[in-house]
Length: 373
Image 1 (spheres, rainbow, N blue to C red):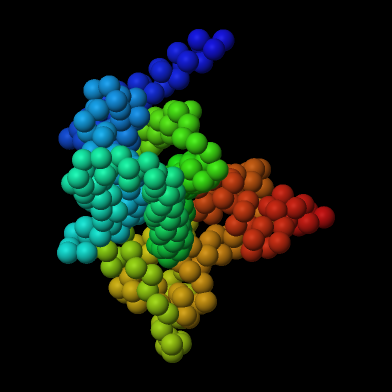
Image 2 (image 1 turned 180 degrees about the horizontal axis):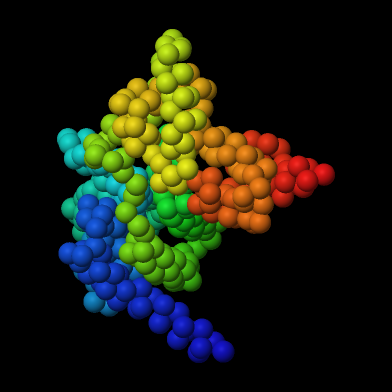
């Protein structure tokens, strides 16, 4: 049994290194979109693979490199968090623009290498004495900075996730094809790695260095390569407002302080009631603005302030009212609830059930039963 688990461990570890190269080639294939995002993900996967290689081969084929650059700790650990952050930003439409401040994201990586190499400039014998006398303190400092960095970037990713959720509610009326559950998945991987680093900090404080902790790190990184890599390949292109590709199109427009002209509110209300654009399941803020001969920003502020809703709720309230009307229409009396929902502009039964109950307090079945009674 021990031999089996040892073999399985080796397969997963070496498989992670091999898969990182394979996935990087797939991500950068000309037929794959999300080019800039995939560059960040590719560098991340290679960084994870390099860390695994160091854990496996330090003291064997990487002896000289290990002794000099890894005196304090693995500097590539400091690359993981900012690269994941850059990848999440690119996928949610927040284009990373490199400037003089960009290198600060990777400052810990360069600082740890500089400090490690500086130790070797000490006179002979001083390095070994320094590390022997302060090894635990140096290790604890290393893990504290790694955990702090990871926690900070995890907070940034979560903030970006919440902002993108808000953006989606201002742009689309159905979210089935623009789900951002993948971002929660990336945050979960992010958190798992951070918990491993946190445990490493705990171990550095209370225990002696353990080879099993290094192997656990290698295994976690290998599994992360599989998870992040294949999720990155399968991830669909993000939603972009029609005709807009700049970052400002993803900024939530702040509500105006003054209430819009009542004539504009009446114009939107009349258009929604007579033209019934909400029956189109692909209705977006951009397409509705075109139909009303308004700009996206004008319509967004009008809906936010004049109607007190975001775009998602504004449209789906009309769809719920349409469902209510269809429930009493003899022409669709034989339709099941899904059929009625699709007729009203919804795209899935699960979303329809959630929205209907949120606006009426009853499930569609309960509401229909009350009508029959």
